[in-house]
Length: 133
Image (cartoon, rainbow, N blue to C red):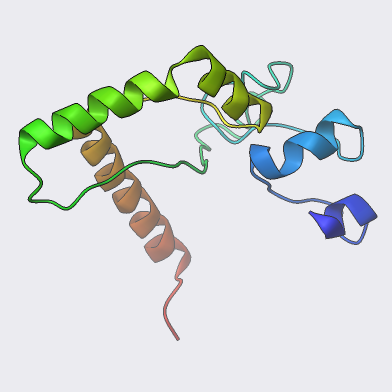
């Protein structure tokens, strides 16, 4: 971020939380968001797909996970309470002010999402030939 703001770097990919303040105060010019849908924080910004790169989607996300053998009633209760807290208007507003968007899904759907992300990035790594050496 420092290199972008100072002009040392001409282009970069940044998370909304790290770039939002610089965008709002005019020190950075956002070109597009890398998510599949437009940002609620910056609805005027097109997605990269809308800007001419179809099929591109990448974004940082945060989630809550527990050990695999956690009893289902505990998982259900944690999901219910965390969802309630995250969707409380004051919490949602505070997170949005930091450039974060709240979205949630069932524990099973989240597990499937994590697996699909692992598959997607494994495929990308293989296709471009990244290896450990």
